[in-house]
Length: 552
Image 1 (cartoon, rainbow, N blue to C red):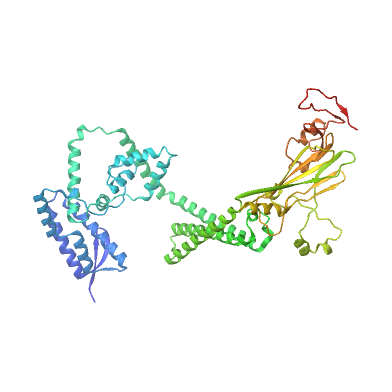
Image 2: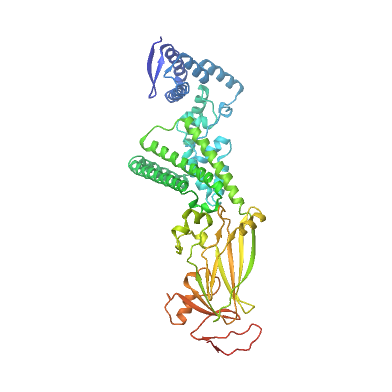
């Protein structure tokens, strides 16, 4: 059982054993006696005491104890150096005429230099850390401003991250000077020498305007910081609460989306982006993506909660496990995302030509088919024969997402024969050409012709359990010369070319909302049919004008 006492070293209270206190008191008495005749002994000894207090604090935190023992005091004295060793070193220094200030062998620490700064002292701090001239660091930052302003952003980040050298120990560590008795004395003497030189040359110095601007900016940011730490605390808490609510809301949204995707099963696979994933990868991508998104949200939530309400953080071991889990989820997401992306590397297409029935009146009506077609699996699941016998199921316009609705396009051209022809060109992508060709082949498109009415399906159908690989079909409808084509508004969005239903109805003095418009196939393509007359087109290889002909 040892007796402990309480001491105060420059405002910091320590519990120390009585033997350790006697050793420390004798050491400090020798130090004060040695520096008694110095220019400012009080400042030197105060800096030494501050350094000892920092070392005591580090020892207590590192060894997780509450009392300073004699072994700790002797370790600090060994690092700081005894007065006898210091006096012996001074004698050797005076004999060899060497200067300690230029024999720095300590470890450099990165600080912002408060004595040599234009703004925040970042450049001078970096120069001290890498032992180079400050002008080169400032020049590098000035040149980096040209590259999209990266220098300004980097300087602002370093200004926030790098601490400012406040104490003499910080400034000594910044320059790599040893933090012992000899180092403190030499640093203080250098500082006094610099002050004397500055005062002696003060009459010849002209204060540059950039330094005045620097002082103004420093004062401005100083008072701004006071305002933020005072009245601005309320704003910081409001901002933190907003961040907490945003993280919580987004986390709930992600959880609901994952739950709905899991509950729906295969019913969501026609929707983007699920449609681009094959069934064997969908769940893995969904779960890994959820983990990748939710863990940063939880981290931001906990850090903000700690900053505002000073709550406890997650244990380091638990945090490490969560971080490893997050990295693993990123790897899984990247792996399967790459496999999905590889399915779009190659393209393939094929076409087939279908002969349509000619219309008796040489008129063709183009419409969208409202009938919904079911696969065999869907028919069995819904029991179509019993539940919907003698019924026609129609398609709602919002049944399919934008990708599925935009995978068909229709071209209308002049036919070289006397009957209409439909050319279907199927396109798809895949990891290889063979896969792309099979993906295109595993699709089908349905159209229905009822005499003069041709109904086109709204979308290209894919086989069951087939992922989306940019499948599309391009339809080329070839109409005989002088045939009339009546185009509905609904199908107009799928037709490529110069078919303008609204303009044609306006020309014929009809309402712009009229459901359809009539066009006539000429030698140069479709033209709006004006009442009962069709303006004959001029042949490309002849300047002869054909007189207008009446249409029955």
